[in-house]
Structure formats: C-alpha cells, structure tokens
Image 1 (tube, rainbow, N blue to C red):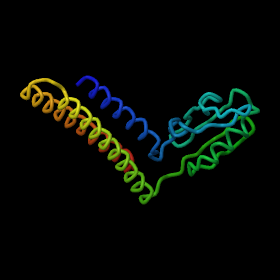
Image 2: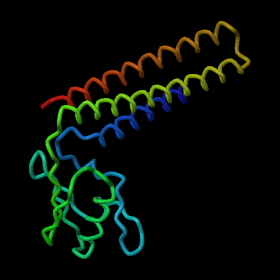
Image 3: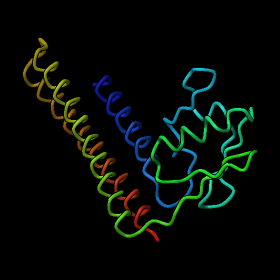
Image 4: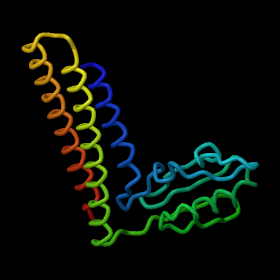
Length: 176
C-alpha cells in the first residue's frame, strides 16, 4: 500500500513538472529545463551556465557566468525549437515570449490533456501492480478485498488530483 501511494505521489510530481514546460504566454525559467548547451565538449544544463531572470512578464534574461558561453547557449535555445528567437546583445540573451493566439492556446490545452492522460495511465499501471501483489499474497480473502478497496480509493483520490491540476492549467492557458 505504502509503495503504491509513493509511486502515485511521484507520478503527480512528474506530471506537475511536465506541465511547467507547457507555457502560458508568460516567461518562466522552467521553459529552459532540459535544454543543454555544449560547454567544453560536455552537454550542460543552461541553469548551470547562467543566471536566468524574469524582468517582465513576457521576457527572460539569461546572463552567463562566463561570457564565452553566450554563443553556445544561444545555439542550444535555437536548436530546442521553443518558438522563441533569442536576442544576443553581447552580455546576455533576451528571450521575448510572444503573445499566444487562440489556436495556439487550444493546442497547449490539448498537449496538457494528453500529459494528464499519460499520468492516469501510469496510475492505472501502479494500481494493477498493487492489485496483483495483493492477489498473490497468502492473506485471507476478506483482507485482500479490503486492501483492493483501499487501492481503488487511493486511485480515485489521485485521479481527482490530476483533474484539479488539469483544470488549473487549462484556466492558466486560456487566460488572455
């Protein structure tokens, strides 16, 4: 039971992290998560190479610790296909997040919905594994039934959390 709940919590955390990467027309340093710049031949996360700040709601400033990495960071952002063109002024890179169109917002909502559905599938797999373990155990039938019901209650709770997370993300994305 505890193992299943722990896995479900990790699934929710993973979902929240993945939803951070779906942008809502506002600048967010999490947009750069997973983007690596080549630094002395080694792929390195941009967060390790520079300070990332949000001076305005729709712009990000990336100020590298070492100015020689400016071109590498700019190249990595271009290759990441964020849909944002970096502006290099010689000292820092400025990313201006464009205003989202209605169509783009709907695409992002679809993407968020698909991500939430993947999390639901992961929860169902966790439930299936837990149910199989309970059924294989040597405990009495009424005790097995009790544990199976507890697992179902747990999955219902976590599915509700996913629904709430999706609704919050949808309202964030559709807000103009």
